[in-house]
Length: 528
Figure 1 (cartoon, rainbow, N blue to C red):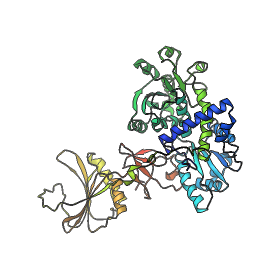
Figure 2 (figure 1 turned 180 degrees about the vertical axis):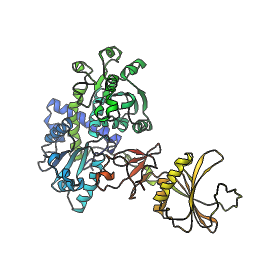
Figure 3 (figure 1 turned 30 degrees about the vertical axis):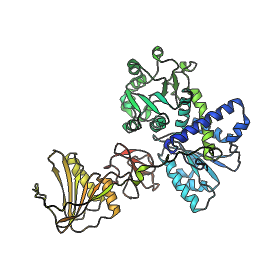
Figure 4 (figure 1 turned 90 degrees about the vertical axis):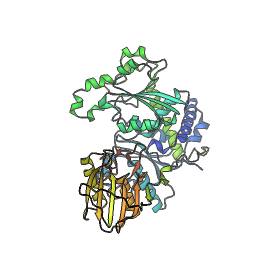
């Protein structure tokens, strides 16, 4: 069984750590064969089928990635097609789903897609798989994300990691790498938050002024993955601190995307992340510089006078792009991969079976309780307690209004209250008299919008049922969910009708299943 055939690569984590390690060994094997002119080995990688359709769809300009994939596809002697975005019906209002479903029906097996719309290939891989099943197509179309907005660029991450490995004697033991430049916008460095997990021990030095620093969500993800992470405001400060990395990864500053305020200080920002001659003596022996390219013509962070020095690993890195993409197409096309032995549980998600709505036995003991601040017990109805405990009263009141709307409680009698416990922390209470049924879907919504609350269902003055909620591992299938990232395929502004979905992160956020944007539990809902 070939576990790679017809698989999509939307984010780097779509391939497990062990699958990626296998991938790198295969890339090394192919590269040696190509350099040696070993046709017998090369033929084992080649799809060699003129009817096998590989389709390039670049909705955002890219010379290097596009041409790298085009040449990789030609290696396979397959049918290579291109959709010209400028003349496509997508620009006339046609949905992405309709366009790619149509192309799927024309015997195209692999789509390589670059777009400013984040999460697009994940959505297409789901939608087009269903289309193929409905129409009894003999294959399931696969999608490769060639870069989506500020989200990820998984194939660039693969070639980056392979280039690192070549300079680490193909060892997965440890890596110490400095990431330098525009870490805020750079999707190639964002992919490294999960990509570098192929190494057993990871140390990352982030070098950028505050305006260009890595978004906090990616820094947190690196820490959650066990990376050692240190921040520095400039190359100069980094080298002064001593013990610099031997591997440096530079990115191009995209200051033009950050408004007039940033442009007014661009000289200072560029200076902080540009390598200078005076830094050379402070580098470690055998240091290598990498860059996803292109460099800025007038203000390169790696100046061109470094091109002929031993620091130059970025040219080999660019060449490696074609080798990596040849192997990726071989795997997804089912040509190689039969010898890979899956590791049990490598794609399992333990969170799927996690219970997050806990039914507890209500206490039958009568307790004397002093009700203050206008709160009185109710004979029949519901009481939701411990809402947003620890927040300010204003924050709690704002969120209780949202809870009432999301749970459909706005038209009911009752009210909301903020109280202060003996520990000095505020909490919210929602009470609604009158009978009301809470089904499983209602409990799911409650857990998502008010994790760590307690729901009491009261009848004849007694607590009939009691539930404690925890943050769900996943939340989906609700019409009023909404990713707040307007670049995301699931955001309503894109008009694709993609239902929003989220998964819980280790630090207690909800991440969009498409674009990866972090949200608090208060932020995943449409405005009510």
